[in-house]
Image: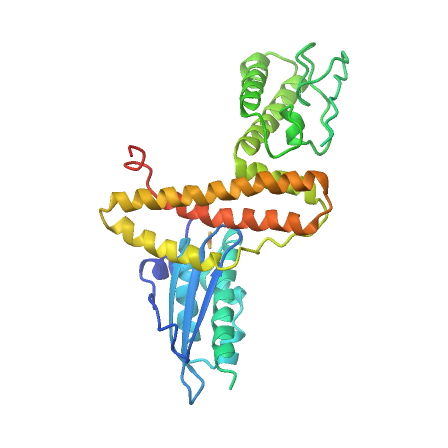
Length: 128
Length: 209
Ligand code: FES
C-alpha cells in the first residue's frame, strides 16, 4: 500500500515527539489503544492556565506509519487551540488531510481518541 | 458440547470431515455457513487434539490436491477448489490458540454484542511501558534483557491461554453467561497488544538461549 506524501512527510519527520510532565496540573495525558491492531498512542497537551489555550503538545506512538502521521498532525493541530476547539477535531479531517485509505481509518480514530482522552484527563484534574 | 457425527450424503457412512467422504470419495454439499470445527472433525471446544487436527489436515489436503482434479469435470474441479480454501481456513484458524479462541467465541456469542475495546485494568499503560522499554532494548546490545522480555511476553500469553481453557469450560456449562463471554473477549483484546510487541522482537539471536 502506498502512503501519501503527507503521511511520509510526518512519518519520516514526526513533529512533537516526546513527553510532557504527567504530574503537571496544566498537562493532560491521553493513552489509547487500537483494538483492531494493538497499537498504542500517548498524546499530551499543555494548557495555559490563564488563556486556557493549548500551548504545547507531544506524542509517542507505537504503531503504523498512518498512526504516527495522524498523531503528529494532531499535535500540530491542537496547538494554539482552545480546549473546546481541540475537542471538536474529527478523525475524518485527519483522513482527508493525510489521504488515508479505508483500511487506515482506524489509525486516525486512534489520534482523535487520544486528543479526547488528553483533554478529559486535563479536565478531570482541573475541576476547580 | 454435543457433537453429532454427520453422515455422507452419497454413501451414508459417518463423515470425519464435513468436506469430503473418505469412504466413497464424494464431496459433500456445503451449507452456507460451515462450522470450521466440523470441517476438521473436532468437537466444538477450545481444547483440541492437535495431533488429530494435523493428521486430518494432511489426509484431506492430499485428497484435495489440485493435481488430482486437473482432468476432472469443471464442476468437480470447482468443488475441490472451494473445499481446499475452506480446509486451509479451518486448519489455520483452529491450530492457532488465539484465532481458535476468537472463532469459538464468535460461535458462542452469536448475536450477543461483546465490547471489543475492553482491556484488563492498567493493561494499556503496561503495554505502553513495555513498548518504550522494547525501543530501548532494540537500540542496545542487551540480548539477555531482550530474551527476558520475550519470555515475559510469552508468559503473559500463556496466562491468557490458561484463562481461555478455564473460561471456555465454564461457558460450556452455562452458554448464556454474558459476563464470562465478555471476559473472554477482554483477554482476546489484550492478546492483540501482546502480539504486537512479540512481532517487534527479531527472532534471530533469541532462539539459541
Ligand atoms: S495499523 Fe494500527 S494504528 Fe494503524
